[in-house]
Length: 495
Image 1: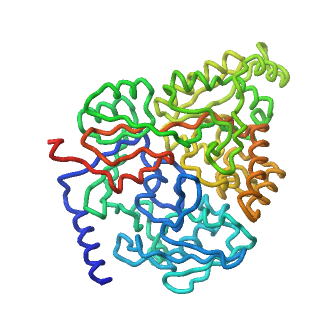
Image 2: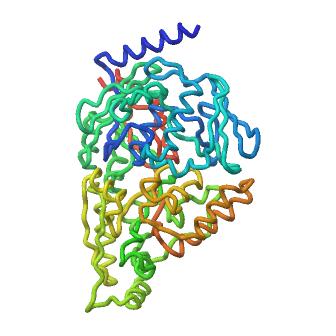
Image 3: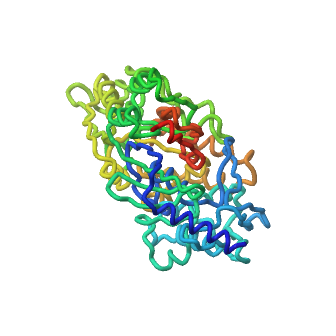
């Protein structure tokens, strides 16, 4: 039976590599940076890698961990046993996914020399013991009641890993889609294992061009990154369908705490008070967002629902600037970096005008995604705009704000260091239950809201536009592309 299943799987791979007559096209504002799950930190890479690789653990709509590749049980406070399920255990090269592949994946992720940004959040793993092909134990340095929720990384084949395979150029996972080709920059072709359908991701940076391609039938699906007037225009077109869902994508302004200017909390507060978030949402996002006060949305069990962010108060901003020594005769100049996405440029220009009204000159600099993101990761900025996508666990606080997560060991790109925050995160991770951890994480959020290494802006709603002949692509709060595994397209109708 195993040989028969493998034969069917290989036949599907052959079909994937034949010249397709039918495909599904999905337009992106920015192409994925990497297809290697050890290093994917941008939204496009994470979303697409979920299609290519399977994970031990996923999350439900209540932000609770659920089995994906494996179920688990706590053998002891510092020992978790994972049992691999049968589904999703065939790699795209035909090899069987076993406990050895899981161990190899997590061994390399937690090895500092690998350079994975996830190394810092896996330091509690002391040892991984393989029991057999289907079972393995994770031994921890200290108790962690939330440990299963940290194992959300794509599993890669141990043999190819040992051979130095380039997963970024030719990914091999066990997800619902297999890699076919990257024929040119900004174009990625995948094959759906279940039926051989070809899925093509196309980078189309300009939102107007994306919309025109959709209306001409060159593109089947758009998701996010569209100005409100284009969404409203598409809602009036008969050939397409617009869907919305409340989202958790967290948008923010970030500061460099190593910079002599933005390290001053009065400057960060002045920027926060100068930004009119409500009108930005109303006029630039068409109301498709809600105010944010923390990284975690209010639905999350660890969220502090009382935090709503800094309210617009330009007079308070001016007073803080004066207190910091800035005024008409000594204006504050800040370099403000953003991506070249037209919607993000438009929002940043709106902010630039608001900042100028309180006496802050924002030197706006936009770059292509690769250059911009490289600068942010390297700490080459004073002020920048970005978003966190798909946050599921309060582990984000270690990853983004703990002093042990300074790059390259994590995503503390603003170089924020606070010993009390470090201690609260450590205590929360060692807490025996959600009930005891939640108030500790709320304390972390309160300190961050006061010190403002980030200025929380909003949680963006998810807006998806599909052609009328595309079905079963449902918008979801997590903003992932998972429904592409079941999406259908009526090719006869298109013809």
